[in-house]
Image (cartoon, rainbow, N blue to C red):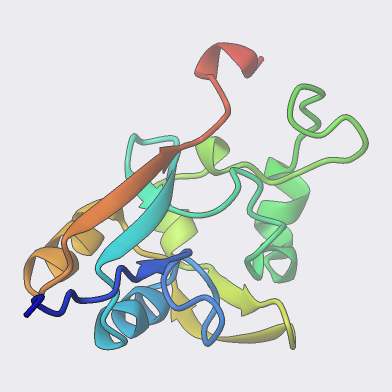
Length: 147
């Protein structure tokens, strides 16, 4: 008799079908749902804190556009990343500034109390449960590309 194997369950940005991806709520949801592997696309803040987010441009999945002080003073045009528009990039903001942003749930564009997660907290979360691994996806951006 063959032993039954557990299915391999790989999350994409946590339980990103239920919650905004790369937020603590999404990663907790993935653990709750029994994910055996959790991915984490890694970005860096200007003060060197690694955190999980799909893109270095925070306009894509956060409420940064509602923060007029950041939007007006920190948006920049980086041709190598987005040749057609300005962005608000994680490497131009401190972790303290990033941690005040909230994730946006793309299907409905709802903004809620869904904060991003620093990598060390994701590490703690997955080590405290039965998740086998975290798949790190370093940003495609090389810091040498940034002016």
